[in-house]
Length: 213
Image (cartoon, rainbow, N blue to C red):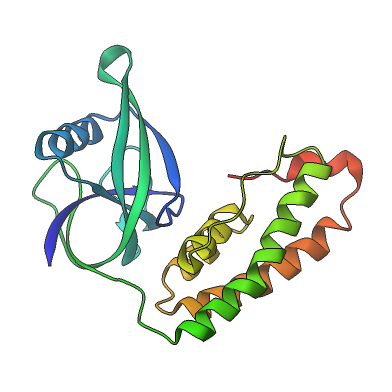
């Protein structure tokens, strides 16, 4: 178990995924300064109750993802743009409220070990759905070009798929909370089949309703 500064947001960060952040509240300026000083990450957690900005720290969901600070761009008035990258899942054991920002006592939450053949099979079935989804977005004008080849690693592919698909934050949180990669791949396959069926019905004038985050 270790101490981790927490940043409650209205989004879900997945391991391996980039996340740009605009830091402007004083408490989070202090959090970033502390993380840079100590060369440590902070945790991104989806808000379960409360607000992302102003007021007391929001109550977060128990499962989050650490965010490594990769780049800092200073702005006026002490504001900054961060480029962060998701690294590993964690589980909050308890919260501390003795600093300007929220702090959690957390423990790592790695995916459980599973049969490699089953994991590889699940990834092989997920990959064409992710690529078909991206190709559909390109054909609709929502994506300029297809990205590079999908990751070879099954976990990286699953988390890329979870980050790309358009689902409400609460549903993405459910994906992040899954402890087994086979279960995550199966849930994503169901979600992608549904999204692809929906995209096939979208009129051309409504393509602006869809975007890749």
